[in-house]
Image 1 (cartoon, helix red, strand yellow):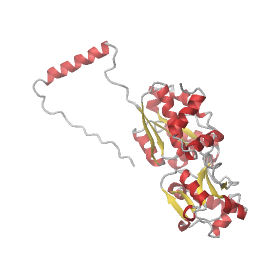
Image 2: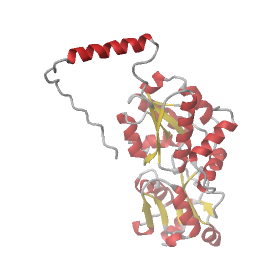
Image 3: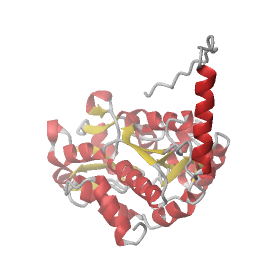
Image 4: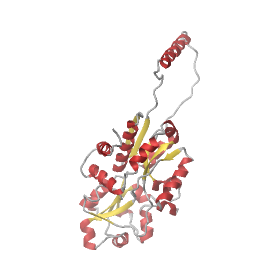
Length: 322
């Protein structure tokens, strides 16, 4: 986790001979700079971050490009880390803006069992209201549910006629599943445990390969290719690899999972400095429906393109940046 910046306040020591003259000269220079119309101090850049997953890199790059198009100085910290690291950096002021999912508000507020998190508008309004108390603003969200799902190796699923999480539960209880998933998915009450409770199965830890971070490009490929015996992988609803890899996504008819719609989250102080950020990002995120995100993510995970390049081309093609 990023360490908090430590500031020490020290009382000034004795004034050295000639210091008053130097300070006077510095003040005069500042006066000349202001009189000439040159700011004595440049605006602090906004720090744009993202998590270390594919869609985070994509949407984080979109945010950075949009801010730069507005003439806002930007420092990129894309791929900074998993959810809690980036969230803590935002709260501490090390980061000014990053793309986050409405559903993670359930974990931030400790209210995973609240049914509001399974309704798109309710989830958004709940975390928007709660985070306003922390000095954070949720901007307009994308109309795509990137919730957690489980996908099976195509051959394995077809041979057993598996299509839903109820089908998955049967083979899981028979000990036939080896799942690749993130530690967050395995441990978060609203993720794998929610599936287990809804569909009546228990996947023991020795049948799970738990990985740090949330990069489903790894878990999906492991399931599709049977790497190390894996036949199931954690995936997201907008994963680009879903159509390219031979995977069967298990449907969730009981709606065990909460809604995950991505939106930029910005520190209120930063938005006050640059209010044009809100409308600019709203125009971008309004177009990011599930098919669009799957296509863009696929260019990165399947075709091997760089996230920044994919984001830049998308925004240019739609006239969202120049």
